[in-house]
Image (cartoon, rainbow, N blue to C red; front, side, top):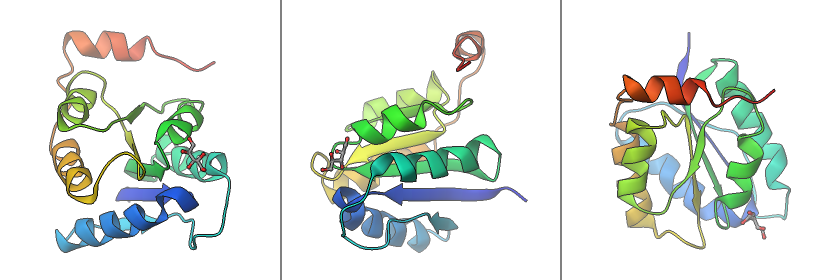
Length: 145
Ligand code: RB5
């Protein structure tokens, strides 16, 4: 059965990852921690690829990736076919990434986004459905060879 959410970070996103896990669990949702599991320096592309592959293979419905800025994670995740990773630092972009782009991964930067804003972003992102319609054709045009 497909599980709810998987989250990953590098060392620069480790603290925010922990806070988001607690927040999501407090809402009674299931969240899988894909690492990293300490603040030792590590390579964000490894984490991004692991999380993105699990979503592309339908093991999890949605993914959250945290690094220093969110940028490296989004670049790496978007190399995986079927992944639409949006790097976001405001609630409006989080909402639009679901409504128009059907984002299946959200990326944030611990050095950019504070804890309370990150929680608001997660809430709106998890609770907004894709509009489909005219946006579906466009999303389907986005392909990785
Ligand atoms: C690590 O220092 C930093 O480069 C990484 O977390 C991320 O921000 C890359 O995009």
